[in-house]
Image (cartoon, rainbow, N blue to C red; front, top):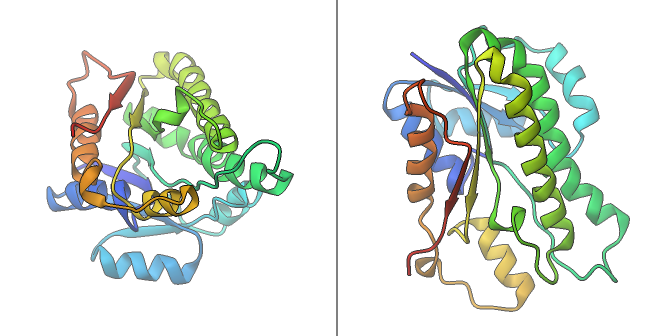
Length: 229
């Protein structure tokens, strides 16, 4: 039985992946920003484990984990959580840049570092759910796209560094996906949000599980998913 550490399991792609893995009998450990949120996730996924780590404050994650029991086995770490805040470079303040860089890039790097000993033993898998913005940046998306371009660099470096240790690394680049984050993006863009126009989170979850289940003789490095409508 595999054990998966998942961020962003509360909604959207993260929720779809967590349900899929738990329903097939795998163990899931859900990362939550605080103990109250951890209890909510444990109620949402009965039998799941949880760990508290505030992705908005990556410098405190190591200390937080030092006060918790780390899972003995970790077969994958799935980085699915993320934050977005749009705006032109001329108007974005440093705090907005830092918020997105910390949550979308620095915290995934720190979580990966902390779980690498278990991942090496298990010959495990790290999955970074990136974004189309991690490949192409457009107006208003500067800070978010920078964090996601950085996430691609993190994944590419990690893949080369950990190949000899048997750790696989996959980046998934979904296009616009129906989720609370997408609703926020539409609000910031001044557009009407229609979930039916965008990728179902279950479809992205299918690609992630496929990458996890691929036989050991192969590895999915980069996987782009686009709306089919």
